[in-house]
Length: 231
Ligand code: OGA
Ligand code: MN
Image (cartoon, rainbow, N blue to C red; front, side, top):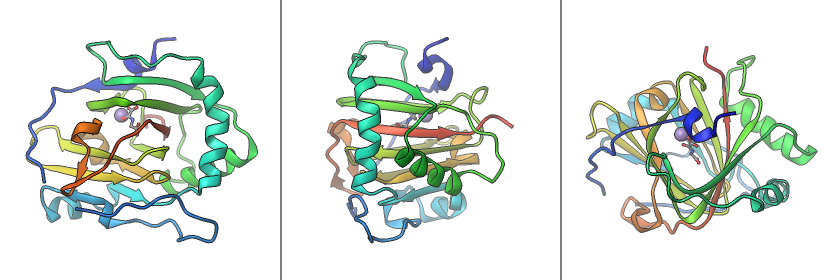
């Protein structure tokens, strides 16, 4: 099988960006707030753009609890530890990462993944079977890219473990149109349709990791990504 980096991503020339605050949250405690769409986690070149994209971009803070994060990590860490972080593929969309796929999960994780699928994908939409796991080193980052339209469908949904981060979307044919998403640890983000096809997405490196003027330290981060199949 081809490595996932060639299968999943099409790297774009980094678009020019002219940037510019702010709410950090962490995992849901038991009995914590219900997962919900959270506008304070999205900021961008104009309000109009965020309005236009509407539900095509969502960030839900505290989508999983710390216990659920722990359950995911317990399943993922042993396999990840056997791999080395990759730093030097010049043509890669990602710098400083290791990745894997996982099809079979224990009960606690199945419950979490079913919740992700229920909120992110239309009922009955055929999903890419294995879940994609991306482990970014503290010094790692994801360059602007669009996921392969050949292998992935209209929706990308990702859980963020271990670290807050900033995801930037930039319109491919108009780089002055951009949105920054603050992805708190334990949040879920969803990119759909135009946000997925017409905007590049990237995860900022630690030195550049700022949301609305506020610094968002980027530590090691593991993402658990569900995708559907092309229609
Ligand atoms: C990818 C990607 C985002 C993330 O693997 O193609 O964009 O949240 N990942 O790790
Ligand atoms: Mn991607």
